[in-house]
Image (cartoon, rainbow, N blue to C red):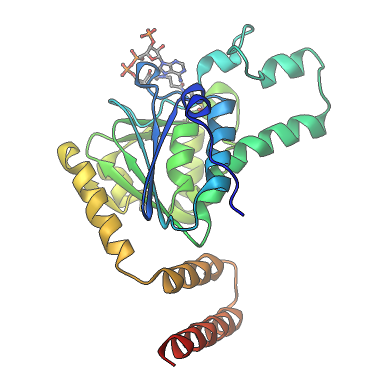
Length: 269
Ligand code: CAA
């Protein structure tokens, strides 16, 4: 049985909106007055959405209200007062409250909001306009595909704040741009324009700002035109391809194809 989705109140408290129409789920970062800054609750609620997603959903589109995709972590999370109702990691550590394993579990619960976006049964698409900073850049990196408006600005800000990127972004970044470029981008914390993002393979597509929704809709339609089971099996194969050796990957292709042929033969018979 599918888990329940977050309630409307939980989504609002997390700064999120969720619309599910058939095979498409649209997750919107919805705190434009804070440039869609995110808190721990945003990430745990994203994880909750992942758990509760109906099986019929094949495409997840993440976008942001207003001029920025996301300004990253809500900087109030670092203040002594913190954000009401949220756990401030800094305050907890400063107070000696919680051992290393508890803090580790808390960060893991935030990362869970990002990790499900690579699940083989869905394709996740980040539709990015304006800034995607820190945790916001990592959210875009957590998606399978990134469609950028031409005003997009990407920045891995964490090292400039004395921190490391810890919301699952380092692996996709290195996979996409290579370790050397990833070192340069992170350790300078510089901002990458949409045009450079395309060159660095950080974007599948860059479009004029007023064409972002239409471009994502076209991409969604094209992705949905492929049968769901074949899409899932193919994504699983592709995700395994980086780590697998050639022979191992060839064996995985054979196994997946036999499953596909069996299913198609059954459906035809
Ligand atoms: N947290 C909380 N509030 C934020 C915010 C953030 N990350 N980013 C913007 N805001 C608030 C601003 O304080 C401002 O509030 P007021 O209207 O009350 O003054 C409002 O949103 C609008 O912001 P700006 O006027 O600055 O908007 P802009 O369009 O000119 O600039 C921006 C947008 C480039 C995103 C800029 O706001 C900015 O640089 N924000 C901070 C980005 C940042 O450092 N994020 C943390 C990255 S590290 C991380 O995410 C991961 C981690 O774990 C450390």
